[in-house]
Length: 167
Image 1 (cartoon, helix red, strand yellow):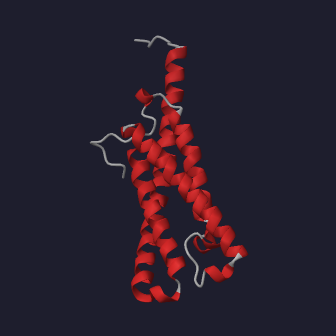
Image 2 (cartoon, one colour):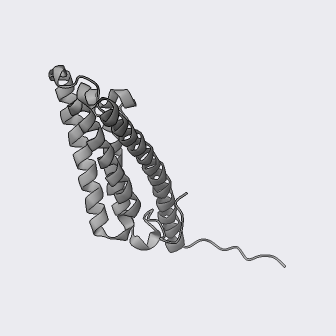
């Protein structure tokens, strides 16, 4: 029996496009969150070790490294929970904004007044010790949050299902 030819209607095609966009956003978001998680762990653990073992050598740099690590932890959690209400999106925006300001301020100070930093912090020289990831990551995070906000909530907007694992 021959199968009748059917043409997809415009509503179905546009729904497929939005679903595909949501999938791409979710994939990009997972990569972004994974990088944030790695940076949060690396910066925080390094700073704790430095503060415990050699605080007197560079307290400002090590204190800033701990602050940056904690900001990355907050940003990671907020990005993971951003679909669970507007408060988490606000926390994510604030964390990313604080992070970008910190990288720009500390990066500039480390160039202009290098005597302030006996040792490098995560944000020194705009994150050069971390391949400039601290400089690029908040910008990418802000772009992703903005794009993620434009998707309809019923199309997933990359938000995790509370019962579903991200990984």
